[in-house]
Amino acid sequence: MTDLTGKVALVTGAARGQGAAEAILFAERGAKVMVCDVLDDEGKKLAAEIGDAAAYIRLDVTKEQDWEAAVAATVKKFGKLNVLINNAGIITVPKVMAETSTADYQKVINVNQLGVFLGMRSVAGAMKDAGGGSIINISSIDGLVGMYGAAAYVASKFAVRGMTKVAALEMGRDNIRVNSIHPGGVATKILDDTGLTQDEAGEVFKSVPLGRIGQPREMATLAAYLASDDSSYSTGAEFIADGGMTAGFALEL
Ligand SMILES: NC(=O)c1ccc[n+]([C@@H]2O[C@H](COP(=O)([O-])OP(=O)(O)OC[C@H]3O[C@@H](n4cnc5c(N)ncnc54)[C@H](O)[C@@H]3O)[C@@H](O)[C@H]2O)c1
Image (cartoon, rainbow, N blue to C red; front, side, top):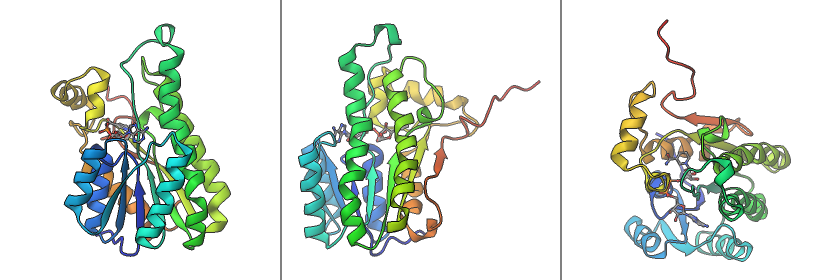
């Protein structure tokens, strides 16, 4: 089992979904966790449920001041910061490019792309002070292939994949590893914003090779591996957890 003893993790978008699953699993495996989100009630409730190993702070990933405060609060509370999961993300209702407004495009880029940039930049000093660390950027299979009606989301997730590699190049000498996770369909509330009900999403993802949608805990176990010393020689790499969705075409000829 992955051991996260001695790790102090800041997880964005951790009030629910994959971020919450990561916060819970990381604490179970011995880490201290700063739960961060803009959903204050849910975030505080989750941190209280986890107990002494967790605390909550409001962090809007698009705001530089929030990042400064969250990093400082994490170091003050838990003594250091050596894991960051840039997990917060949004999607908007699918629309073809011709019908996508500039405001909608920029909203997605701000959270999914600028938020990840600010996160990596904000933790670099604290991680260096800690002797190194692991940054895990949650991209998507939409950072590997296109998705109809999701120009901004796809652009942001490709950007996360690219930035991950730049950060890996720049931070390697400080013993900071930077990797991206590329989930396929995962049963969380973000799917509501695509216009699909959870039941409909469950049906859609029956077509992937593993025949089902993914669960948040299945992304958390991958993130735990990347946060742990078990992945000590991986940096700048892409880790896909998509039930085989991007493996190819399942045409029986
Ligand atoms: N669920 C999927 O099918 C799927 C697939 C691929 C990638 N992803 C990615 O996984 C990540 C987690 O999403 P999820 O599936 O758990 O969905 P989710 O909607 O349950 O969780 C996203 C979290 O991000 C938070 N958030 C949104 N804007 C924020 C901001 N400005 N600052 C801080 N927090 C903010 C939300 O409040 C929410 O708690 C996202 O980056 C998403 O793009 C999801």
